[in-house]
Image 1 (cartoon, rainbow, N blue to C red):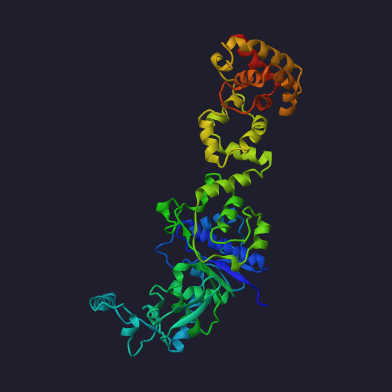
Image 2: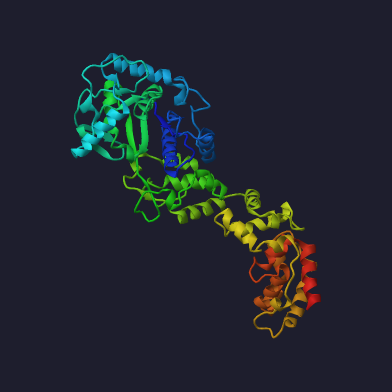
Length: 480
């Protein structure tokens, strides 16, 4: 059985669109599943559109997701470089093969003449086809003129797609297309066929926008006597409303923007995998190994899937829950503004104790940053100024009614074990049950945080530590 080889072949134009990333992911998953190779090829033959730094950006994006390549811009293969701009001699060799067969010729027309042909077709209300103006005799190709492929057989093409099934397109899709430009660079139509053959690619995964061009590709495969690979058409990624393809206007972002916003790579991989692929079960959360084992081409859907940011947030929370306390504390620290990290009581150890109470609630770094900016965590890292009026429980007539309960709590906590929130709770719980939970827990929590909303008082006391907790309770007793 032939070794499975897949590839992702982006152009270095500066933006890693979610659709392209998912194509890379599916190509990688299938190669891994089948014990094959995944190739990262850079299609940099249109120098006018190339953005400086894009190749490194593409590599960084895939690396963040854990997508590794057997061969790539940094890893030449037995077939040579994975940068198309390094492979010009290879394209010229294949082009010369077509010339020798009489299946390629230099374009003799000027741009003005070609435009006149297009205008004539437009006036006659018919599509422009270059082959209708093909010269009867061909000059010698010296590289100064674009080289065009000569369609030798105008026919209706039929082919099989692993996702869409049997497809076909008619003669109107075939034309004498340019395969080598006047600047010596190949066109996509030609270069990707040559490269896929040279790199022994077995499965070509790409978007549905390429279906219409497939007859052109097939005619080139035939002319070069290259066997067809397996075509795998990706379903489109739709905007949240499911009515149109996801675009920048719909909030589509460069992949690494999601990293900046605090999405975990594992969550993004899991989320993207499920847009257009259905494992056939109710399961939604997959580890990397599990995803590779489960992935099949047969489960790729024909219809598009919506890019639902709420689902992505949910997925991210699922993966945040899986982080160790230490790793989540690092995640929180990255999200905290300097107004928090510069507070007098801020330490890594205090953050580590606070982290679990944050972990159970948040979906992203943005939520942590917003909460911090609203002062939600400041009590943990600085002694709060407590409004005595807040200490009053709803059944009390004044804040002074809480004094004896807080005094008793202070006595109990003075001898308490502060090693965990549970040991702190055990020290005062019997008394709380005796006087009423709210009657004790409310003023105790407010004394520790100065806030109406915060974690439970046992967690708060554990986070700030015994000495600080006792000082805060005594402080409110004094102020009342």
